[in-house]
Length: 414
Image (tube, rainbow, N blue to C red; front, side, top):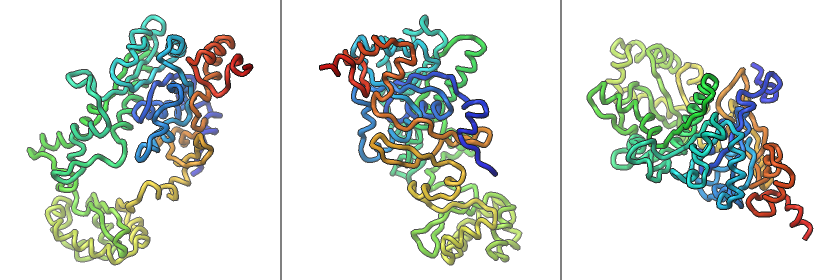
C-alpha cells in the first residue's frame, strides 16, 4: 500500500478544515490539544501568548514535553491582555474568527471583555469553546487538573491496586477532554451551516473522566458487583495478561479473546492436550480454569526469547504486544513506515520526532506545515493578514501591547 503524504492531500483538494480560522487563548495541555487537532486538520490556528511567551514552554520534568507536542502547525502572536490596546487587538482577531479556544480559569476572559457575550453582536457565527475542569454545576468554579479529575472520577482507583490510587501514565483526561472539545466544535460548525448561528461549547476534565469509567458503572448495573481495580479485576478472558520471556525484563502481553483464537494459539504452540480438552472449548469455561491455565502459559513464555515469542504469536493471529517504553516508539517499524511519526524543529533549532494526529483521511496522515514558533514570531504577519494596517502594527509594537520578533520602527531608530 502506498502511503499518501499531506502534500498529496493538499493537492487533492485541501486539508479538511482549510479555511477555518481559530484564535486560541490557551496553556498547558487541554486547550492546546484541542487547537493542535484543528491545526493538524488544516485550520489556521493563531495562538495568543502573553508577552514573553506561554509559561508552558518553560515547564520542567514531565511537563517539558507539553509545548512541543501540542503546539505545532500554529502561528504565535504575543499580546499583553492587561493593556487596553492588547485587548482591543485580540477582539479584532476574534471578530474575524470561526472558532475561539480557551482554557483559563472560569470567567477569566470574560473579565477582560473577551467572553462569549462580548461577540454576540460583532461575530454571531463564532463557535466559542471553553476547556474546563467541570461543566455547569456545584463544582464548576473549582480549580482542576488532569490528576484531580482522575482521582475524583474513579480512574485512579481503577488503575492502581486497592488502597493505592494511581494516575494513568499520560495526560489522558486533558487530551481526551480536548478531543471531546473538537467533537463539540465540529458539531457546532455543522449546525452553523444550517442556522447561521454560532454556539458556546464546553468540555471538561471531570465529565470526561466519568464518561471513560462509564463501562465500570455499567458493570455494576449488569452484574450487581462493583468493578475492582484493573490489577485485581476478574478478566473476561483466561489468557489476557503480561508474561515474562527468557529474559524477565523483556515482557509480552498476550490476549486470547475468542474460541477461534484459543484453537489457533494452542495449535501454534503445540498445546495439543489443552486444544483437545472439551472442558476448555468455550471462553467462560477457560476463565473459570484461569488459575490452572496461566501457570502453563507462563512456563511456555519463559522458554522463548521475546523476539521468537513475538514471531510465534504473529503466526497464531492472537492479540499480543511487547511491553514498550515511549522512546521505543521512535524505532517502531510500523510507525516509521506509515508516516505516524513527524519531524519537528524546536525553537532552539533541535530536531525531534513526535506522533502525528492518529487519523487517516483518504489514506493520508496529517503532517507538519509549521514548526514550533518562537513567542510572537508571527505577530506582524497575523496582524497584517487579519486586516491591521502598517501604522497600527507599528503603534501596537511600540506600545508594548504586541510583542514581535522585529523591533518597531521608532525603537529601531533610537
